Image (cartoon, rainbow, N blue to C red; front, side):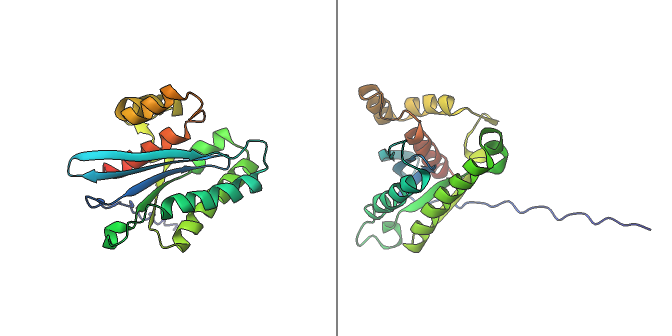
Length: 194
C-alpha cells in the first residue's frame, strides 16, 4: 500500500512594522544600475527624503559595473547613519530580491547569474557593515490591485505619489531612463506601508 505524505505548508515570512522615525532605504539593484530612495514614516505620514541612481556606463562589463555599484550603494547607506540615534539611527534597508519566475521570461541563465551576483554583492556588503536588510520579492511589491504591474505603470504611480520625483524627472528627462529610481521609491513605500 502506497501512502503519500502531505507537504507541510510553507511559512509566510512576515515583515514587522518599522518604528516611526526609522530611516529606511529602498534599493532596486541590477547589474546595470541601482536605484535608491530614503524615507521615513511618522504616524500616518510617509516622507521620501532623497533618491537617486548609481548608473555606471553601459559599455562597461558586468564586473566593472558591480565594482562601482556595490561601494557607492554602501557609501550612500553609511552616509545616512545618524549619530546618537540609538537603534533608530541606523537605517533599515529594503531590497528587491529577484524571483526566478518573472525573471526567467526576460533573461538568459547568464543574465540571471549576473543579476544574482550584483544583488548578492550589495547584500553581503551591507550585512558586513551591520545593516539589517529586508528582502522583498518583486512578485510581491510590484502588484497593483492584486496584479503584477509593468515598470512603466509603476513609475506613473510613483510620479503621482511623490511630487519631488515628478519634478526631478520633468526637469531632467534623462534622470531615470531605466526607471530604477522609481522602483527604489516604490519598494521603499511598500516597506513603509507595512
